[in-house]
Length: 331
Image (cartoon, rainbow, N blue to C red; front, side, top):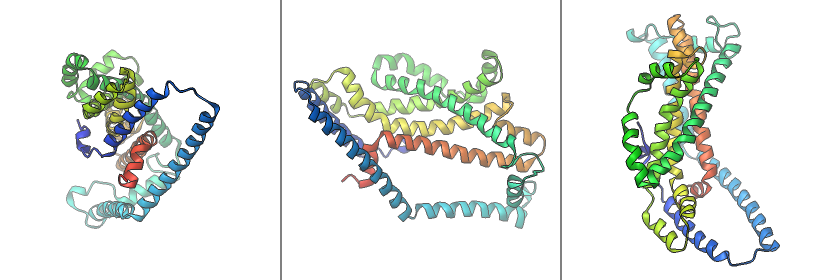
């Protein structure tokens, strides 16, 4: 299982954010003795508006920086090399091991056809039905995995007693492949939908919980001690120190988790699904409809990339302090 150690460059914005949080706790405890006023509320509202405008300017600044960098153009070069290599090996050079593969022009023609040979294209209803059913399963499975994985990961990192009880069982179950769970899932759950969602959420749960635990354990203990010395309660420490400090790891884990959910979903749909992109790929192989296999694979890549990007955008929205630090280079 890939963990957040793959993304070990824990940017300096996290300690900087936690230092500011400790100062905030000190000010909030001191402010408890001060009477609130309408003027303070008005100032708070204006500060929120100013912060919203600053966040918009920051987003536009990041987009402009990205467009000025070589990254988008290198990305286009990468796609061109992939498609060009596919076209050359299959349709021009006709290499022996690629003789049975569908060519680029054949796949594009079938994908865009109003009357596809194998019945699946962007103009057919069944194509979007497969996509929507897979997206619904991913949404449910990913939501269940996040709802269970984040709290359990926080407890694994925060509570030594809980980790001593639960982590050995967690590590025992985590390496078991998803396909090994298929027979038990079919036995435990009735129907064809519930086993697929269970298998989708299971692997995603382990990735989310493990990265969340690593995020909590990565927080410097001195921040917790400083907040406690300033009179912060256990809940305040958890809310203002532990949770913000673990967020970068949590959202790294969620990006890994949504990718794991997709390949778990495809495996589950191939075994027990009746609709979905995994079922489409497996059924196309059985029916010797090779262009449809590639169409299903490319569609999986597109929707998987979009779902991972959506998780990343939500993370940037919740961690504007981190985005600001990254965009300004820590200044």
